[in-house]
Length: 374
Image (cartoon, rainbow, N blue to C red; front, top):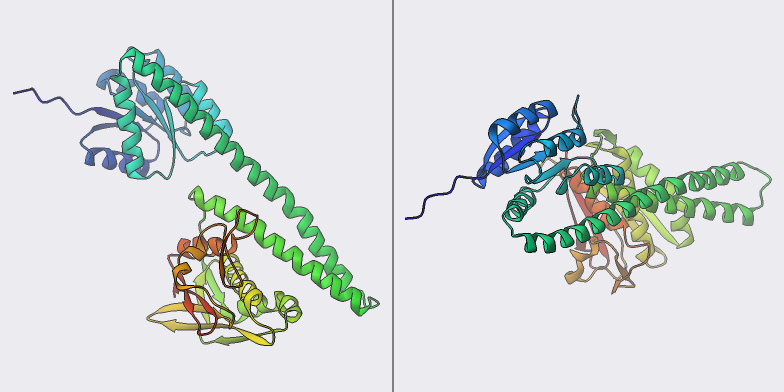
């Protein structure tokens, strides 16, 4: 009978007790032995005393940070052979590069999925047991993975820069359009053009904010700031903002508000309704109406935007909320252009509130619906 091998020992270093507890519970559920430290200095002492097989290391800690701790661990007996995985909420290029330079073996961002944490630790322990030849092949793959990760972080940073840099000129366009509209000597034809400029500027700003919030959601940072939102005032603001677009499309907008308020992030909810109403206007026939309604259902607030267009095919009811999926005149179209993000943003924003989102057949048309805790 073969002797039972001891469970691998993992050292978790994090100054946040909740983070330590989560990582410890995740790894102990998979059969690992876990020891913890709440600072870099304590990590060095525990490493010498416990001889762990792998180290999970936070970056931002008071006193000795993760980079300095990693460098010091590498100088200890056994430190060069022990895999060190950075586990951090920092998702930026500078942090990633410093982690590589300090001698880390892997880099995982919070919030992490338990299955992903287990897979990274398991891979690190397997690498430790590899022969020199296999390790050389693995190092090549790891360098390729790190290069891909670095490219992804560069793309995210560029996206954030572009969005923030574009917001200012777009806001300036809207401001100057508002100033022109205050000019009482402006001719009607010019006034209509200025109103169209302002409408398109607001539409472009919504697109930029959608991109920014989708990026935040991917990083687990899309957190609604809840407050009591007056639905009469909010829906009035939404319809007033989109009135020029509806008028140009010969579409009438109607409200039926049966619920006074909801606990939500006012800005996120307004943009969800703007996306819904703008989408409804785009697909509504001429001389038809778009209905924005609210009601209380089983203690939850339901918001609905209905049009009488060609509707959404039943097999597209789920896919229509995916990124870059659009419907054009009722037909299925998948595009890789800059549009097709509005409904994807709506899904992320409503789910961040703990709500649900779906589309119904309006017979005719489509009804886009959200339900949120009251």
